[in-house]
Image (tube, rainbow, N blue to C red):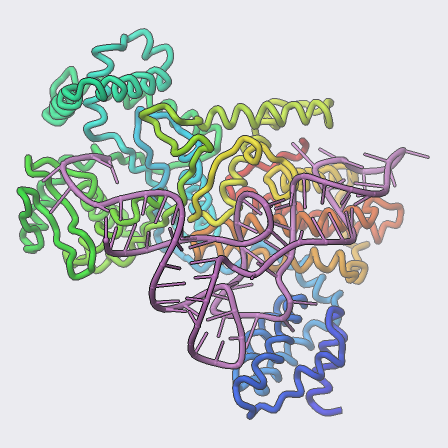
Amino acid sequence: MNFKENIANLLAENIKDISYEEILLSIEIPPDSSKGDFAFPCFRLSKALKKAPNIIATELSQSMIKPDYIEKIETVAGYLNFFVGRANYVKNILEGNYLDITKTGNKQVILIDYASLNIAKPFHIGHIKNVVVGDSLYRIFKFLGYNCIGINHLGDWGTQFGKLIVAYRKWGNKEEVENKGIVELLRLYIKFHDEAEKDPTLNDQGREWFSKIEKGDKEAIDIWNWFKDISLDYFNMLCDKLDIHMDYFIGESFYMDKLSSLIDTLSSKGILTESEGAQIISLDEYNLPPCLVLKKDGSSLYATRDLAAAIYRKNEFNFDKCIYITASEQKLHFNQVFKSLEKAGYTWANKLIHIAHGLVNLESGKISTRNGNIITLEEWIDEATEKTLKIIEEKNPALSNKLKVAEQVGIGAIIFSNLFYNSGKDVTFSWETALRFDGETGPYVQYTHSRCCSLMRKNEADIDVSHVDFSLLIDDTSFELVKLISSFPDSIISSAEKYEPMYIARHLIEICKAFNKFYNEYAILVDDAKVKNTRLYLVNAVRNVLREGLNLLCIKAPEEM
RNA sequence: GCACAUAUAGCUCAAUCGGAUAGAGUGCCAGACUUCGAAUCUGGAUGUUGUAGGUUCGAUUCCUACUAUGUGCACCA
């Protein structure tokens, strides 16, 4: 038997998805053929091998396509000797700690700026993606061993507060605001914009009041602080509900006393120029429109505060990476800010990363707070919770803490639907899809998890390891599940590398599908102690992976639902 | 006008560095609960990957043009 036949034999023995003849055919490629002749069949083999145990498949697919593949294949043969048969592979995966992956990030500091919403406005369905992508990435990087810092760059400064004060003084009163909180602030905000259509001088009054805030006028500052407190209470309430954690609330107003030194620095570097009365940083060399730093009246802008914030963060936290998460509308803005910092000579500017997520539209058109075309996040949560409660009443009326579980599942559905798709894409919200609980959804994963828990619970005793026989798990259905568990860490790494929790969400769905198939095909709690304990061993692994996976997506994993 | 996205099954979306017969869910049709939870599972039908070219042994993927949609572009954030 020659070398190739030997390899083919080993492969065919280990991999049921591909025949010996096929393998032999694929390996029988002259190594000196031109690229086109052998690349295709080689790839054919390596792709088929993806169905094989992970380590073998990865090694092969990496090596086969390269010119020196004959040499590499000998290395692969070495690997194969470690995995004689599926049983050993299963043992390896299930006995090893399948969630313990290389902690690549040792001590590196990753700062994530997310959930940076404007205060005095309600959370709407377009905001959830930002919050949830941010918190999920926070959890993912933390899991990988990075030192994460979550910062909320609160939008608590700007002309809008002047406008709100005008509206409050004209049409609001203390009792209403105290009783209704953010709802009343929204009403005033909408009212202001309605009235300003008819009477544009209101906008001037708004600017005047904002300028009073900036100058420290007591009445203005008091109202501003009051509104800010209301907003923060509301924000914290929602964060508690969603189980979102922020390390720091450092809003835009925080940077007000740091702007003058920023301007000094920029002008001493000679990159500040005057244009049409305003102070700008020209970005012609980057083929970008200029970055406006100061208005002609000398007051600051959004970009000014972001420049100051970046420098402050670098000095204060000395980050290795700083990730900004915002809607895609702000792409140009961050591009300008980052390039301005680069132009100013800050070498760390390349460590600033902007992750833009898509916009959410309504079927009735674009979301707009100022004309009231919004669906708030609370409405979505309430609807989802209510629907879940109905399902629980129908399917599991004996459940003890129904309301709590209903909220966890309802919110789980919302979060999952926000993380299951490519986060850069725009989406159109519809109640029909927003309240779907079947198929590729959060509740499907949660349901599968609670099924695992149920099995573990029903077994009462601990798994008896002395009865575990991994060769009972080498059938295709069980083995598929084992492979998916073993490759779960790859998805965590992909998610981190691409700043995209979607990979984890999709992997969880694959695990659930494989598990439910397994569950349907085999009885688990059987009399035979060997079979029972072995299958429970696998169930336990699935449960652990699902729980950790859901946690990385900021979703609760109730044990019963 | 300029810039940046996006376009894949009826609908919502995947497709790893350019790889094999482009895959899931949903909806539709047909099945599986006196048995570990049916929010589940099994089977079936569904495609000129926006259009036209180019590069390549090979293109949903890269390049060019065009079409459609979205977003941004000077004192808002």
